[in-house]
Length: 491
Image 1 (spheres, one colour):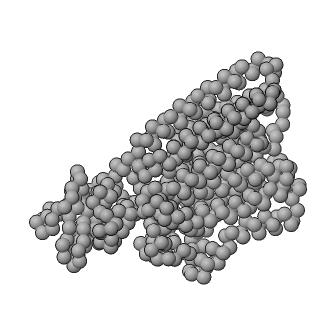
Image 2 (tube, rainbow, N blue to C red):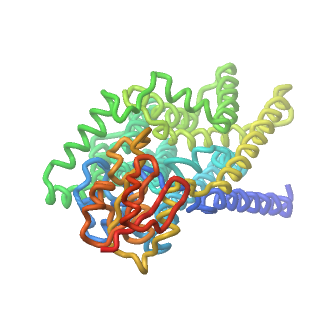
Image 3 (cartoon, rainbow, N blue to C red):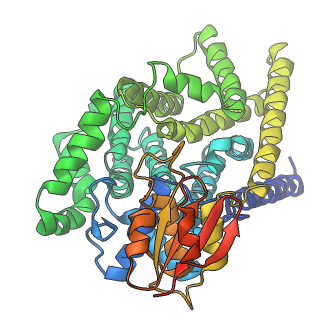
């Protein structure tokens, strides 16, 4: 090949990479504030970060002003949400920005590693899997303000260090450091890193190269970043947080059904098969694996690495009684790497390898076309997101942080057919966070009864189901959106 031809090929790669990463950027950042705030994890992290900024306490995460023993995770995610608030203001964009950035960095790092390790085809086709996978742009991932995307970034980097350790076992030290960062993001979920690395060194024989000093250094590097926060937290409330962290997030989730999160032994397999992108990418990877086994060829260390990267989380999480679909999102990058490796192998094959080459190229083409189709669907879904939640829309449209800070506001949800698993006179997490964003409001519980007893200026949001219509004669109705009403106490 001529130097000019080689330069043209390299230029084509960088242009295509830029286009695919730009597409990923649009999927991650465009209309980032479009979807309504999500209850539970996103809202919980957002409220804790908001209160952290207000109180100046960067050690103990709180909810409604009290230490939070429900979200049992270290505060690294809250720190990055704080940064988002400082950059973009109090709103969904500031809340979710770091998650989108984490996935963007993951895509960049993964594609560049594959380019260096295998080639341009592997790099580009792996990105197709991530662009086509709908999980990446949905709940608990790149467009949500919780800990999953950040943990994913550190997990992927740890796995790349693990694959590099096939050539130099000391690269596992990088995985150990990533474990510490992942733990500060999502607590014990980070244990998937040492579990996967252990499986890898066992199946590849690298475990024979590890000595006692290696194990000690791995442990040291793993806890080095965790220790300062752990000591600071212990000095605040002793072992209370750590005991709940271990007993609830590990022991109870592994042995009992928590919060109705249940599923059978094949729950995660069924979930993986529900994604068209995972099916398209997985079918090609499975075909490549079967082809290799039929040829009686051994798997390389990297192939073993990708296999355990994909399989270990599925197996270990399937053993737990409580099931949550997003726990196996970490399998998506593994499948992307396997898909890229398979495509690179086919693209690099000699035209004389046999009749099967044309069929394999056809499979790659069909799978890639399916992934592009999925990516287009993701773009349509992202573009169509809007705040459909009436409660959040009312709060956002009526209140203003400049004119309403500190105003007291009550809420009463529909008392019949109540959707929320809380007292219908108490604020749910996502609406509470929206009220903080919209007007720095004080969210008061107690519903209509407490509002009517209020001696200070206050507001009430009420659904017409369960509404005490008599109060409208005493308190003015100042806003209405379908079944929702906003009334004001002018005391």
